[in-house]
Length: 321
Ligand code: TXA
Ligand code: MG
Image (cartoon, rainbow, N blue to C red; front, top):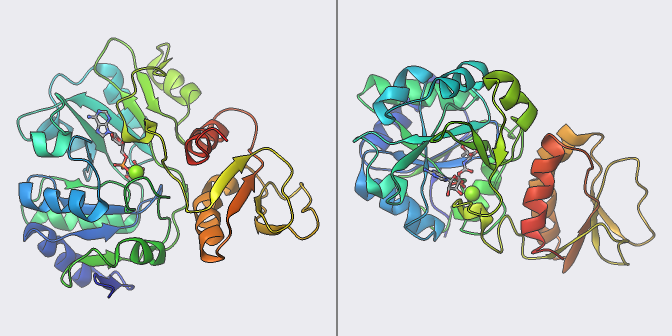
């Protein structure tokens, strides 16, 4: 049976109700511009524990705390470097998470025991209105990982959240529908705990944008990434994902519109450019599973910026195939 009340018309009233549900320890799946998140009161240990249970995620993986504006930055973080302030000014609300030294508000149950906390102001009207309603009743922030089972494809629609987590949510929990996510891949994660920024996960906020904002050289953490996305078998559908080879008969195929579909191959998406590729990739991978396909071939977009983020996710989804 599927649970989690589906709220398709997010009015001020329904968002006030959702905020109260969070305050009472319930879970609310919410739309963001990157992917849908599974939200809980970031100061409530029991509610946050339920996120881990519903996702089937190991408890030492930290969660991102979503806040309404950079005004709440100092509630959650200590010793914020000035370059992090410029990043927040330039890119919030937006697809960027800053990892900062945590304040006492950020407890072990939300940071996975790390001395740092991940913070983000999402750029989505429903998410911001929910955060604002939550603050009005004393809420400090909403902890929200992507609203998928651990290791699976992130959801970019409320329907995908329901398919993914409906069987694990409680009756009183809610899924807010805010339409399809406009970015489509998860936020850029930037470690701001040393003298210069380090990218832990690539996303729509690119290295170039970070360097322009901070006037600092950005390093890319390749070896010691502590983010869960760096584990094997992430962002993965049931179907096996293969990269950059010719698809065979009966296989799914995702590629830019300019690339033709070979005969008896099942075309799952034909994005016109990199931005559309990011927006469609997760729903196309879900479609492969909905169609019961065993394998799907993706012709990756080239170049850097957002294409780099797409290739990062696909490399993990394909386990290097
Ligand atoms: O776009 C996004 O970031 C979405 C939306 C819902 O905001 N959220 C998201 O959350 O992708 P999640 O939990 O699926 O991925 C967040 C990643 C995890 O791999 C986690 O390990 C990492 O962020 N992370 C969170 N806090 C961290 C910290 N303090 N230090 C290092 N990594 C951290
Ligand atoms: Mg995730």
